[in-house]
Image 1 (spheres, rainbow, N blue to C red):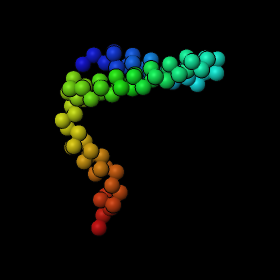
Image 2 (cartoon, rainbow, N blue to C red):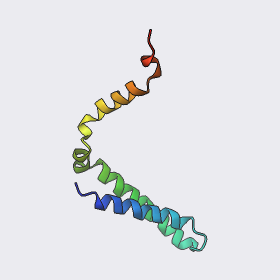
Image 3 (cartoon, rainbow, N blue to C red):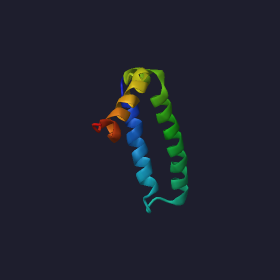
Amino acid sequence: MELTELTSLIAIRQYVVNSTANPAINRETVSYMNGVLILLDKKIVSLLKGQEFKEYIEYQNVREAIEEVARITNIKSGLKK
């Protein structure tokens, strides 16, 4: 999978977030940017949930990964009896 689109959208999203906190930008533009932020989030999430990305990160193994993390972080299970 080519990650260029996803990373570019994330960079744009960061710029938009920073811009909305800039006091030099007028309220009307900030309102517009807030709307853009919502749309960017929707687009990023749709790419992350897409089949191509799931295949790229081998999402079919998510259950095993979760179980492995639970085993590693479970302090009680690591204690000798």
